[in-house]
Length: 67
Image (cartoon, rainbow, N blue to C red; front, side, top):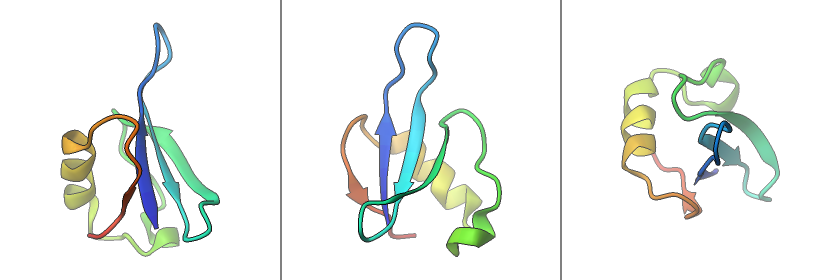
């Protein structure tokens, strides 16, 4: 899977996109709110690591999600 952090503008908040190996969007959520239903993506129990990754990520750079 891949992850990208998208910068919001004005009143639109920052968002996180998670995409599968074919770059199909599988999750889309606000960067300042925790993601729900992580078990659907095999990420249960990795909430803290995912939050740390999101906080450190630069905006607009697609990277492989390896937790």
